[in-house]
Image (cartoon, rainbow, N blue to C red; front, side, top):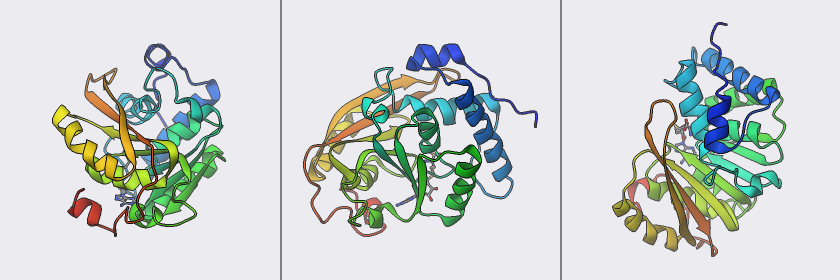
Length: 245
Ligand code: SAH
């Protein structure tokens, strides 16, 4: 295997005030190799070049959990988190590597992707992560998952309104949803406010940033759950995307 990820110690330090340990760097490299290998059978990601993988999968995943150049404090204190529509494991697997004290559930509706993630977790020895197959609309109505998580992450799964409906029911009161976006406008913020309040949340912060290598624009939306989500949400499978709140 000739593909080696760059270390980027200075960039990690400057942007997140953090650097991976040698062991974490090794896990990033193993993750990268397993994904390249898995890509031959499964359509996991188009991002396969080492620098691009580092930026768009590793750095981007961790930037979302470090809004003030610090990892969200509950992650250090053993938060329980869920990554909804994790796909090949983003942002959930890099978060599990970077925050070993948290427990993270990796949810996806595709059994094949989850089987692949199971293999990654075993090979990387990531005992703080577990998998779940299902649709966010169904999982969010199950008592063992509803209102159970401190943090919920969601990247590249649907509209912001659908993402809010998938994440907020799963959070404990006081919990935080992190919605990863590319472009974002103030009009979209205004439109989302009403949706979020119907779900028992409020928009706490919106972070805008530029990725360190390709200088692309990104946003992360931070939604705080401040009240119980009405039992009608999330609605049935498909409704959050077809009839956005
Ligand atoms: N978060 C990853 C993958 C994005 S692709 C990344 O950023 O790279 C979107 C993934 O979400 C797919 O794997 C798809 O199976 C899953 N997905 C889409 N809708 C879902 C839903 N309602 N519930 C659970 N998973 C869903």
